[in-house]
Length: 118
Length: 118
DNA sequence: ATAATATATGAACAGTTGTTCATATATTAT
DNA sequence: ATAATATATGAACAACTGTTCATATATTAT
Image (tube, rainbow over all chains, first blue to last red; front, side, top):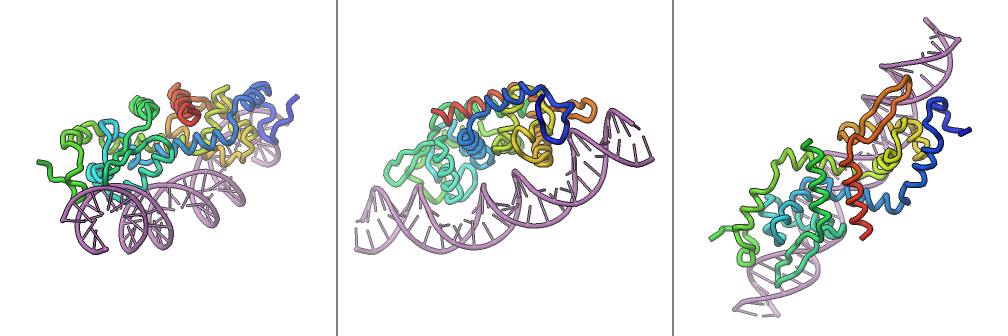
């Protein structure tokens, strides 16, 4: 018989489920990376930047203008998005254009919208 | 011609794109809710709880045991998950069982995993 | 070279978040 | 009623986050 925590001994679900849950749990590094990824989506400014980039690649100061925020604030957030590999950038002269890195961004945001709208 | 911010006047993308981006931007409340939702996914403890619930509904103290955390910490986080409507609960005597609210959780986490693993 | 423009970045500060601790509530058994 | 068990919750504190401000870097034009 399973030796559980001090609490809820008699009401505990079957030990098989517990060991199964332990098996299917991704390793610590993956869980950390996953949480880090979602943290990036967890900010209004960054979500708005991503939405803006749904339409087209865009330079830093246009994003700043669109969102009515300072160039610095946008630049800081673009760095976060870039580190998470959600956006990429290309330089054209003095201007740096940012664009969505791949389609996961759309899918994840789309699923999120589905959830809050239901 | 478009009157842009002081910066990058001559390099700015076409004004049509700017107004298009403005149109397709969800309203503030939606953007806020969306960011709030992703914030909930943006924590290792909560991600681990959700993973545990992939297998089966589970009571608070079993989750606490599985994740090696205090009952209080888990309970606090379950409240956050519940407020975000990612989990639901049912009471059976003294025990409260938590379970995933719907399939968006799996999809969102799955897409997140796809992204970090690619 | 210097000036102008676009972007990036470090430090600081306020606001937020997650855990711990103590305690409250809810249910069951006696 | 009281005791025991499972869960919930408020306060406090440390750690983290996003913006602002000042300034640095990069590119282009003169």
